Every structure is written in C-alpha cells, then in structure tokens.
Amino acid sequence: MKDEENISELMSGIGQRAKAAAAQLAYVSAALKAQALTAAADAVWDARADILEANAKDLAFGRDKGLSDAMMDRLMLDETRIQGMVDGLRSVAAQDDPVGETLAEWDRPSGLHIKRVRTPLGVIGVIYESRPNVTADAGALCLKAGNAVILRGGSESFHSARAIHACLQKGLREAGLPEDAVQLVPTRDRAAVSEMLTMTDLIDVIVPRGGKGLVGLVQREARVPVFSHLEGIVHIYIDAAADPEKALRVVLNAKTRRTGICGAAECLLIHRDVADTIGKGIIRALMDAGVEMRVNADLAGIEGTVPAQDDDWGREYLDMVMAARVVENVEDAIAHIRRYGSSHTDCIVTEDPAAVETFMMRLDSAILMHNASTQFADGGEFGMGAEIGIATGKMHARGPVGAAQLTSFKYIVTGDGTVRG
Image (cartoon, rainbow, N blue to C red; front, side):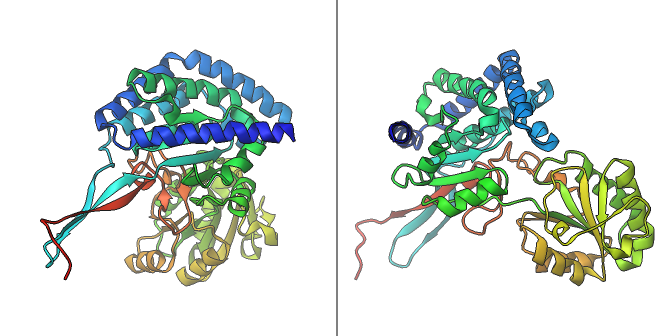
C-alpha cells in the first residue's frame, strides 16, 4: 500500500509541475521553442556515446527478457538512428509554429469579427514501448505545439530514454524554458501507467504508442481522453491493372525494409486475373528475401508456401511473415480489408484510375496509398519532422500525429461596443 501511495504522490507531483509548465508554454515565443529544440539536437549528438552505452544496457535487459527480434530491432540504437533523432529535432525546430495560427476568420452582420486560432492542448501523457526515439519525437512535437508532456517509456528502454531525456532538458535550460515542460516518469513500476490514465485534472490527453496489449489497456482503463493507435494490420492489394515492376518494388519494400514498424505490410491481396503471373512472382520474391508466406488455397500450389489459418487474416506479425490470398476484384479486396483491417494504412497497386477511385472512396483507413510503399506511413516522411504516433481513431487527430495535430483551437471574437438585440 505504501508503494502505491508513493507512486500516486510521485505522479501527482509530476502532473502538477507539468500543468504549471504548460501554462507558461502556451505563450512562449516560437523562437525560444526552436532554440530549445536545436540545442537538444546538439546535445543528443554530443551525448551519442553515452546514449549508445545506455542502449547497450537496455538491449541486454531485452535479451534477458526474451524480446522478439522485431522488438529488439525497435529497441536498438546505432549512430544512424541517433542521427535520425537529431534530424527530427532540427526538422521540428524549423517548422512553422502552429500555436496562434489563424484557421479561419469571418465577419458577422452583428458587427462581430470572429477568428478561430490554434491553441495548445495543455498536458499530454505519452505511454510507449521499446522505441527510445519516441522520447525525442514526442518531447519535440509536444513542445513545438506549446504543450507540456509526461513521457512514460517501456521498462525495456529505461536507460536509453533517460539519456535522451537528459538532452531534451539541456535544450530547455539553454532556452530558459521550464524543465518541467518535458518530464520522464522515473520508475519502471506499472502503477505509474494506471495513475496517468486517471489523472483527469492534470493530463488533457493520453497517447499510447505500442502493441495491442498496451493500447487495449489504455483504452479500457483511461478516464483521460485517448488518441487511439491500434495495430498496423496493413494490406496491399495488387489489382488486375498493376504494373508488375512497380508491384514487386512496392511490396518487397513494404514488407522487408523494416518488419517491426506499424507501417510494414502484413497481408497481400491479389486479383485473380494476375494471381498466376504478378502474384506468383511477388510471392516467390518475398520467399527469396526470407519471408514466410501463409497463403489461401488458390496460392497453395506455389512451392514453399504455408497454408494460412483463420487467425492469419487480421494479424500483425511484425516479423518476416506475411499472409496472402486471391480476391475476385477491388470490391472483394475492400470487403476483406473492412473485415480484417485496423484502419491504419492500406495500399492499392494499379494503373487503373477507376480502381484507385473505388479503393480511396470506399475505404476509411487513416492512410490510403496508391503505388507507394506502406513504409512511408510515418510523420517524418509526411514532412512533419517526426510523429507521436499514427492515430487510427476518428476523433480529433487521425493518421500521423505531428505538432499541428497536438493543438486544439479557440475563438477570438472582436466587437466595437457591440451588443445583442
């Protein structure tokens, strides 16, 4: 009981400090926020040896814990990935400041002038697993949007997150901004997560970034509003009018570039008319690249494939495994995706504009792609500098959540002694 009281006290203190920092950040100049992020980027690069040393401890912890290869890949940092974090921080710093942006303005016959302007959300709680880079991405985006953030990384990335967080705090100090603007929960105790989910008076929104278990827990237990980020059950549909070369290039990249990210393709749908040509060629190429292909009866004649089971449809493997099946047409592909998809990212490969229009109009995934690898489902690739996650819900934010998506808006109404009759 004493430990629970201590965690409750710890989290309440963090929340109160975050709320005070958020009140200050709401009116901080764009220049100071950019200065803090640029200084943080410099600090990350200067501390790269320390960050890699901390990451080595986390990798050892992950191995002892028996993490999957995909999870270990998410956890691993090297100099290239640290450079990616630095680039992300600089990119966010260089973006236009969303706070105070006028979204719309108009005059009323009453004499009122009305403006709708962007305003920070306040305090954001980010709960994430494995990926240490989320510490930098989430901290940067929340700060850019004038929000304070409480970061709760996974137990497996504990040391890496602390080393990166120290760099963010150095950036805040150099810009003269409150260090409480970006706080990292200093315990692996899971009770801290439960506390965050119920801090309705101190946290304005929760963003979960992780697997189905984490997101499900957050959605079940949170009393604070949540930006949903469900599984990436990503489909690619190869249409009858697909260009063979484009299809091969897109599918191989979408599956094999990095299997452990939420934009990795998990299911291949192939139009019956090209199943024996383009489809067979792509499946063989995937197997040559080391992918285990779990296929329906129409594709079972391809040597080396494995028969798909019922639970292979609608499954996020995050591994070198992919499901594949033959469909009759674009409508059949859409029906499959609507049944088994997660509203994350889905792609059509075709040269037929009518098929593209049908696919784009009838599906409602957060991201829909045409002739492009689903690995582009990423805020950095969308020009957001970084992302805090891919929101698959329909309220407030959808798709890659960047700085602009971490704002709300308010109305500024101006009169001249105007009264209502």
